[in-house]
Length: 151
Image (cartoon, rainbow, N blue to C red; front, side, top):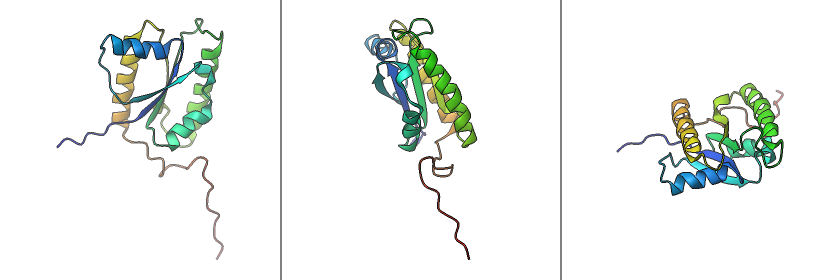
């Protein structure tokens, strides 16, 4: 029996481009790893860093944020906001001992189903190499730390 580790990826996909790219990949029968759990958001710029942290707390091994190409955002600068947030979030995660490779931002228009599929496949391979996120061994973000006991 093969007990290969299968990572869980939470994907926040832009309604206008990336979610439709995922839909196109399915309709075109492009094969890609079934590890991503897609969450449709109106814009990648609406993904709050707290959503990413919650995904990790709830058991995700990686988080992908996918949106429109820069300059083609339906909300003008939403994807640029997402890029800034992911850059800062990666630095914060690194300080907490979580590999920055566990978060990824992808640009995929509605006609680029293969781009999104390739990104999911690549992230799945990368997370398999990293192994599961050992959240409990790392600092628990959002959990109160026990106070030191004086003797």
